[in-house]
Image: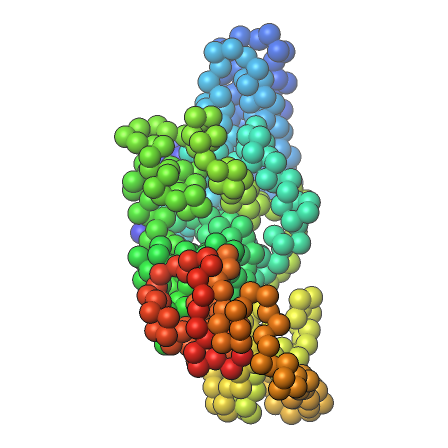
Length: 496
């Protein structure tokens, strides 16, 4: 699909007219606070022309001079936008459009060719080397989604998003970096669904960073589960069910496919309003739909809408947008994501082993600061970490770890250590203590009282039951339905 930025055609004409320009003159300083609107517009036009001249220099390979000219022109546009905000009658959207266009062109899209989209798809197909930060596919709809909702440096003028940027860059900075690392290893499984649906990759990352922090097996107190945190009913509506005891909300590929379908459905109903769709994702489409009604111009930031939503949703939308923007432009915020080779790989086990044992023997091979437990869990969501996998079982892992597995996990001291730790036995309580269940949440040893956030899958895993389906059948429950807090469950075919 060869959809291009709408501005490229105009830029190409501008470049042709400016081909004889060798340098970009310095932009004029911003006018004083009392300047009239026409003067602001004139200076904006001049700064935009100077920016296009700087692009010409870049095309000629004059990197140092072009970067200096680009910086001057962008500073002028930034200053002019600040002046516009404080000038009665000034159209701030006009400055936003010019500045947002400049930001997108600065990211490299002005160097595009007719074959860029096909080349991008080939380079980013599952199995390809994903690199660190890959430019979004420059489809018109992606640009529209990001542009309309001020996903640009001008988000600094939006209080909630500015506050969210600060949160990510301060106390949640480690969480954001870890989510980025996890996403790079999951990218080949999750990004194709969004790419196929014409949705921005940055939005996928933003949702995952806020929802689960990159943990495929995350479960919330409300019962939402998986990397993109689907509630049971919504997940089932988009094809995520419990099959053979496995909750498909934990499958990253299926979760991404379901999320893309959900977002596109809501975008169609909410006039491609990304902020409103994110509000629906978090707060429920019913509530948001009632707030929007038949309006085609409803804004999440409108006080009548904003304050009608829950505090959680009011915080959620800016956090997702801020994480998406930081994913695209970390350097602008003194943020440096680690370089991650997310190319997918696998090994067929040379010996029977658990994911726990593999995590021990792989250690911090290839410099992982976090170890490999979460990565192995994320890439093999159907396997329990302490379940022994037989010889020959396929284990998904980053491709560069294939050699590390052969070095450290087939034989040697790390294999022996991992096996020794796996074989450790916890003390067995005396029989008279087993009869009296010490758990304050259970009536006795064969029952359990449902608490907030519980799911059949989590309960079955905790009490070592045969499967969530067996647990549901024994309690006459629909395995796809949410559990009612306070319900007393019979623990049938459970070891604990």
